[in-house]
Length: 318
Image 1 (cartoon, rainbow, N blue to C red):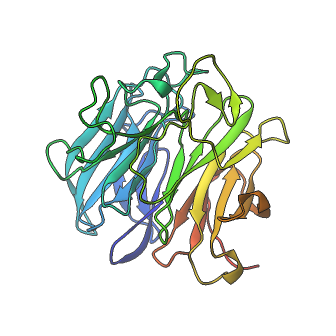
Image 2: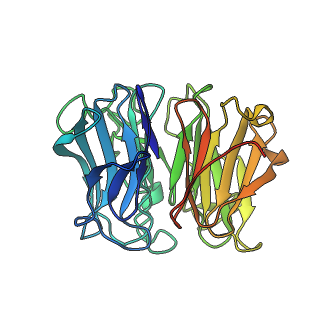
C-alpha cells in the first residue's frame, strides 16, 4: 500500500497485477504481464515525493524483476518506462518493497535470488544486486542515477546501487516518519525470522549477515567483519510461524498508547505484535490478520494491515 502527496486515497497493489485506489479505480493493470507464482506478481508500490511519478515492483512472465515508472496526474498513468530490470534465477525470494526515504531517494528490496540456502552466495556478493537493498535516484538520469554518497560508489567489484547487503528476502521494510530509522523484515530459512534496524543518518553499507548467519545463529561457514545484529528474532519452530512481515512505527493520534511502537507480524501464524522502539523485548500481541502480507501507513500516520485473503484493515482502538 502507498499514499500520494495531496491525495487522500489509498493505493493498493494486488499481487495479480492491478494497482487500485480505495475509491475503486484501477490505475495500472499488469495482470496480463506478471508471473503468478507464490512469491511473484505485483509486489510493491511507491510514489515520488512530488506525487508526479508512480513506481511499481513486479515480476514478468519469465520471473524477472522490473521496477517501472509512470507519470501520474491523479487520474491517468502515462509515459511508462522501465527504471531497473534484474534477472531472477529462481521463482522465490524476489523482495519487492519500494519506498522513498527521508533523503528523497528510492530504496528497492531484492531477495537473494531464491531456491534455499542462497546457493549462489548472492547475499554476501557485492557484485550482484540480489540479496540487497538498493538506493537510487530514478529521476536523476536515464534509466536512473546512483547517489554519489552510496557506500560502494567507486569500489572495485561492487555494484554502486547497493545500500545494504546480507539479506535473504527483505519482503517489507519501512521508514519511521518521525525518526527516519529504517526497519527491515528479513524472511528466514528454517530456524529464525528477523527484523533489522538501521538508524537514521546511517552512511549505508551494513551487512546483515545472510547467508553466513540466520537470525543470530551461524548458518554457513565463512567470516565477515562487522555483521549487524538483528534487533528482533523469533523462532520458526514455534506455532505456525513462517514469514516475518515488517510494519511501521506508529505515529498516528487515534491510539495514544501505541505511539512509538513498532508493529510486525507473521504471514502464516497471523499474529500482530507491537514493541516499544526503546524496549523491543517488550513486544505484546495486539491482534490477528489471516494471511497477513503487508502493513500500510496513511497520510495521517494511521496504520493499515493487508491480507492475501483480500481485505484491507485499518488499525483502530479497541
